[in-house]
Amino acid sequence: MIQFNNLNQEAPYVLFKKKYDDALNLGQISIEAISISSYNKEISEVDSRYVNLKFITNDEFIFFSNYNSPKASSFNSFNQIAALVYWPVINVQIRIKAKIKKTSNEYNQKYFFDRSEEKNALAISSNQSKPINSYSEVKANYNKSLKNDDLKKCPEFWGGYSFVPYYFEFWEGHESRINKREIFDKIDGVWKQSFLQP
Ligand SMILES: Cc1cc2nc3c(=O)[nH]c(=O)nc-3n(C[C@H](O)[C@H](O)[C@H](O)COP(=O)(O)O)c2cc1C
Image 1: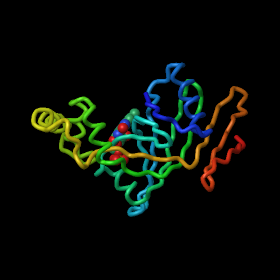
Image 2: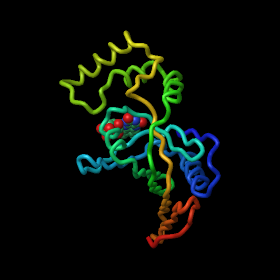
Image 3: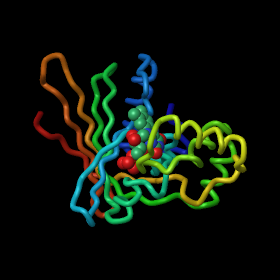
């Protein structure tokens, strides 16, 4: 589930929430899963991965991750990302382009404090995306952290990312194949709505 807080009332945000509610009401699983594509300028490489979108607060989309991970290096080198969801129960794809930044240390501490100790032990014990000899070593590191670490204190290498969209495309599949593509492009601070051919 995504938590909406004080949602921005501009058209693309309202439409995003409407599609979300439609998908949720029809039982869409993993509704919070969102693909984030990034570009790492240093190594000239594009990459994608899913994350769980936790909050949409006003105009900011927020997820949490490891600040030393490959995605973090990409965001540091190039702060523009593409985000993507597809909700099969309503046959809707939403493409987003956005600028991304870290959330504040204070925000991270508060969020971390309220999470389960099990989740926090995993966040603390994992050098995300670094190689390790075996899966049993992953589990041993986790159990060690669960026993020994302060599981209420957010480590500096972990926290939120907030991205603010400047472009949305809502693609709606129709049985007739006459699919609808509605665009919202933020130009000089104003959302410009248009349509694309399918
Ligand atoms: C449905 C789904 C949700 C995920 N949610 C997160 C998440 O919220 N944060 C995160 O760091 N990784 C999440 N992951 C794992 C990432 O896809 C990825 O493996 C990890 O973040 C390392 O990515 P990187 O090497 O590009 O930094 C999720 C994976 C899936 C399949």
